[in-house]
Image (cartoon, rainbow, N blue to C red; front, side, top):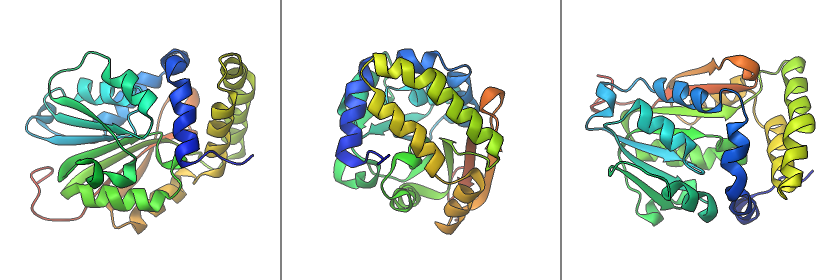
Length: 243
């Protein structure tokens, strides 16, 4: 299968935006896992005085996780899909949460300027045409010693984990998505996970982009070995975070 990219992928997410929240709500642990990854940023004082970028916010599930864990942070949430972003922005948020329509690689063009104290990216990198370009954009957006948490379907490399992922997609996700008219998108999502980096390979990619203190941390439940949080930090000596 040829994976969807760029405008085609954004259009598929636009179409799926109306039912996306319903599908993810059926995923055991989905929202709890996002909150766990947000906590793994390790930001102090509920985020008071800090700026956080939610990269690829979708319909706002990752934004909600950040807002729950870091209620005092100023959160900027961006996404390339206008439909997904409209759903996210239409929900109730505190005044310090804002939404911007832009691809991750074009933050400056959309007026999203750093430095940010942290970047959170959920289910983004395997959908990027050039994940290294996105990592470079993240690096530039972060303050020195700013933190990164990537919450992503990154398989462990074990055959069993790949088999479980395939069984879930074939037996549960695709039948439901096809009925809803979004089979093409969810076939893409299935194959994008299989073709993307393993957790260790993605951690190596992050190190190669210049980040330090890189770790790939597992998530619990049926997604153990399938979903990980990759945490890292931009080097530096003059940021407010993590001194």
